[in-house]
Length: 198
Image 1 (cartoon, rainbow, N blue to C red):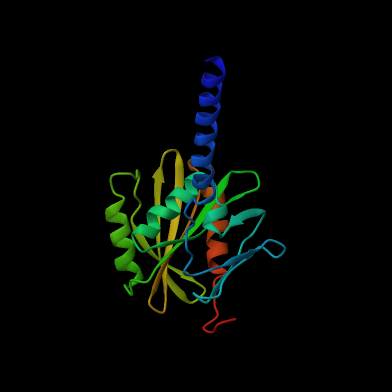
Image 2 (spheres, one colour):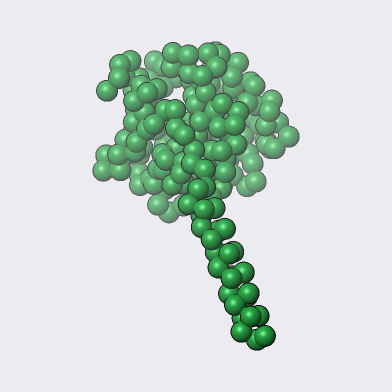
């Protein structure tokens, strides 16, 4: 009787393992509609389908594959994907003091209208909303939004490329923001629209 009991326990243990194996190997991946790449040797973010480049100043770790992002970013990417948006990239400086992310959606809305929509959606979560202002990356028009959330100050830049609405955000601790806003503006001002597939 003892042998039977031990065999049943072993079978139950292995049955659990066999049930878990497919779950481990079949976790859903997130499809990318606008596959991109961060060239760490040059600090250049490149998105061929959306036809733009950004050059990052400083030491950044940028992740473009949502399936290789940290669990929170991957969950955020899945949430966005369900609504038809794509998390293009997330990243931090190597010191972990600053963050960034890019989001794209094919809405064919003017940048200001899209920014107003995003602002309304997030009004309950943000503090110290400083409103929307016009911003130019060189001669390229954008809309800039500055706000606070959970001890961080964010700046988001909204712009269009063809029918795509794109928003690029940067953030740091509120007390550091004034020192780094010029850096964030410099990065977004490095925007190059390629207008052709590379």
